[in-house]
Length: 384
Ligand code: FE2
Image (cartoon, rainbow, N blue to C red; front, side, top):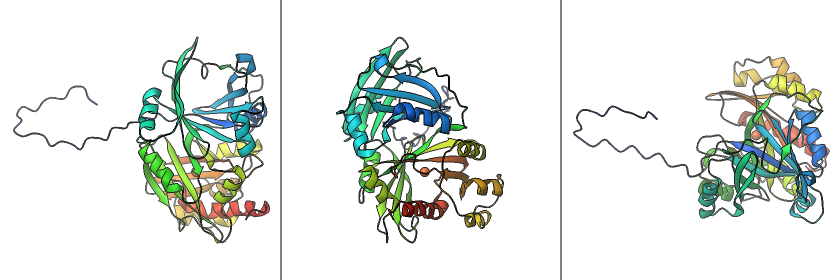
């Protein structure tokens, strides 16, 4: 905002009060990191480095004075993953893995004031997970706090203005001799939650009331249905649009929907997929496939009518077809996206790779092709 504005020479009437911009009580600067609880963090870190091109960043465990767990932080551009495993039985991390398998525990969000984030959200009904606490080491201090969301997932609020270390106090820099190159992944575009039947609207209300998010898009079972199954989804976004959380719930269908399959095998609600953005999806996906990342197969017939549906695109159709990349257009541009198969043996968490060329939507035009691809996988698992 300009600091000086020339005052009008005469003021004969009061200026009309502009509608006060609604104060954002929870200003968020994007995703700080995504924490996974996994059965073997050492091996998971190797997988995400080898397959997805993440770089070693920081480590904490018995050697750094942490007695019950080991955590590996890995990074690629603005994407940071934290992989945590219990090193003993009978603790909440071990219980989480016993119940859910590998999965997302925390969606950590960057804030300027973690104490205020906690106060503002808990006073609006958020259930506290962690009261504000200050962690410090020779690199400075991080303040963190947290609240519960759906399932066993939590949101952590991370304030790190005064921190200059590699990741967080308690971690040491992780220097590795094994450093596969990056694959062009840039930042978290969105994280999708699967919730139980009838729970989508209560969680939409949670994001509205407790976190000040808005519902920016809604898909009903007419938008997202195949011959067999359906789901409903509402996309929640914070004020500046840096943080987007679509929430899915299953809808009635002839057979078991993909959300039902997730809820059964995850044994509850949780994060279904994390979408990671790239600036060149063809290069990124070519590289990921070479490194062994498995993607859902899209029938070649999808490409027969693609250009009729989306109009001109910069990419070569054959390159997209060869890789199985999907395209959709909205009023503002288009987007390219592709979905991995689940990255663990339970049919639960997967990743999306997305490149946005103007479009701010989520690929509604691809839902049918995509869900039919998912159902072929479900059928192969005997879960359809
Ligand atoms: Fe997505």
